[in-house]
Amino acid sequence: MTGVKPPTILIFDSGVGGLTVFREIVNALPGAAYVYVADDAGFPYGDKPEDALIERILNVIGAAIAAHKPDLVVVACNTASTLALTQLRAKFPVPFVGTVPAIKPACAQSQSKRIAVLGTQATVSREYTRALIREFATGCDVGMVGSSHLATYAEAELSGNPAADDAIKTEIAPCFVDADGRRTDTVVLACTHYPLLTARFRAIAPWPVEWLDPAPAIARRVADLIGPRPPSGTPSPPRMIFTSDRAPSPALTKALAAYGF
Ligand code: DGL
Image (cartoon, rainbow, N blue to C red; front, side, top):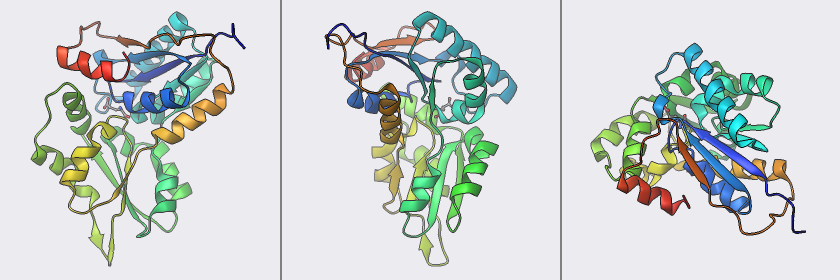
């Protein structure tokens, strides 16, 4: 089946965190054409007022849809998805796949029925996240842990400036609860930046837990929606767009090259 145009998939995040979702989608759909938009001019999203952030997300994604005409958009950012998915779907006819905290699978797989949701302050305080807990966390104790710094540490890690162990430890410490004979056994990575730090988390954690990264499930959802659509030849290299127009540092350029950019 040559001559069938490969699908174009737009991946969006406030920064490089969406790469953790992108890499899983590329594994599932290596023949697609990819455009990655990092709204680094607006980073971090976690501390922005909601109304201004909704407007910004609609504008940036709207411009990217107009420029690249994607077949599907992945909002590879929990902070943006929990805030603006509804408005995005209402405004643009293209299908959207969001990333929202994986509370349902975490509660289902937890043995101790004590989990933590680690995300930006914005994500953990959103009604969207609270509704997920009401719906899917019956019988499970859920600790909400908002971090102001981890996304920035993840950006720095990828750029070759890793944060100190103590700084990371302070951010993840509230995830670990040992009470009533039950310890936290699962931590939901509810920010797409955080899987960039999983090796650091494992090394620093006071006891082993499952660090639940929803990216493989998101990739399966994207593959289902795109359906069988064979590419017409060698896939084009992915494109990376930074809204700041900055030139990435040599270390970041090298890190991006490992993702195929
Ligand atoms: N990667 C984003 C997320 O999944 C957030 C980082 C930010 O604060 O901009 O929530």
